[in-house]
Image (tube, rainbow, N blue to C red; front, side):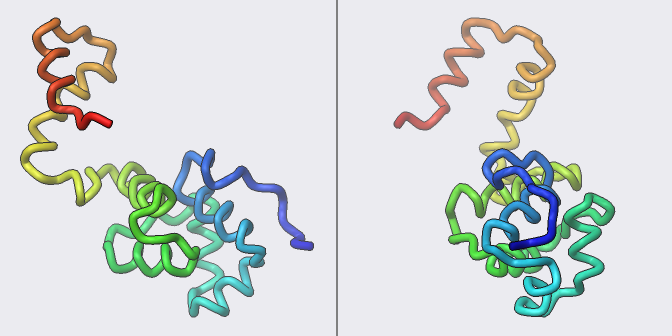
Length: 132
């Protein structure tokens, strides 16, 4: 049994550190064992999990962490790790930095701020969303 406080499920963790810790614990790994197996510094990972150290910005480091956390590339958890890192560092996720996505951001920002879009703007946005 791990001697750590219960942590939220990775699916409901809202910070990079909380997600990281929840995922590590779901693997049944203590901080020290996880770091030993992944060749990571326990002090830095502890700070990362507690939000005292910001998430890395480099894709390479995030991919390394994702592999250590046994996240399948392209899975929802994979994207969650990258998205939380982007949010906490004030960046747009790299896969959304294409011009076609960047042009849509003003409408999204207005919506998030509670400003109403016109009917034409809503129709235009709906046409651009992928259909399932």
